[in-house]
Structures are given as structure tokens and as C-alpha cells.
Length: 75
Image (cartoon, rainbow, N blue to C red; front, top):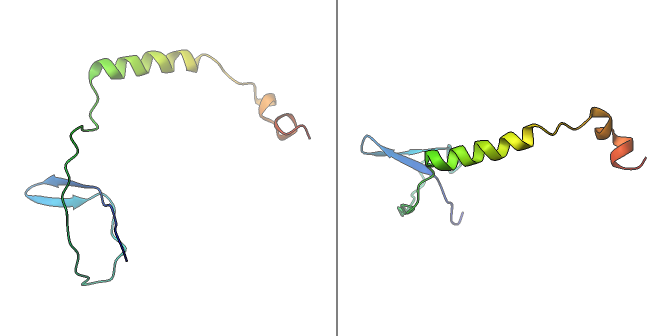
């Protein structure tokens, strides 16, 4: 089958898979644990910067007429 990379969370002294595995029942597997140095948690400052950037994008609506197939593909 080869190599699979599976994301999991460690809680209550066990690994909890984020998605089910599609492997044969009773298959023998080898587990290598790698703990990334950086986590996905973001600082409050980073989230504020993102929100301010998104705020400027929200103010630019695209008219529905511009999204018609004839306009997009010159039909």
C-alpha cells in the first residue's frame, strides 16, 4: 500500500485520527510520530490583521451581470 500521512490529535493518552483510514481490516501498520514545531494556532494580532485585510475586500462587490458566461468567455 505504501506510505500514508495521517493527521491525528493526542488526547486522553491516545491518538485520535482526524479522518477514517481506508485500509484492510486487521492490517499491521507501523506508526511514526512527528510533532510539528509550529502549531496552527494564531495570535490575536495575526487574526486582527487578517480581519482588517478582509474588511477591505468585502467592500468591493462584483455585479451579477459581470459573472454571466457570455461576459466571462466572450460568447
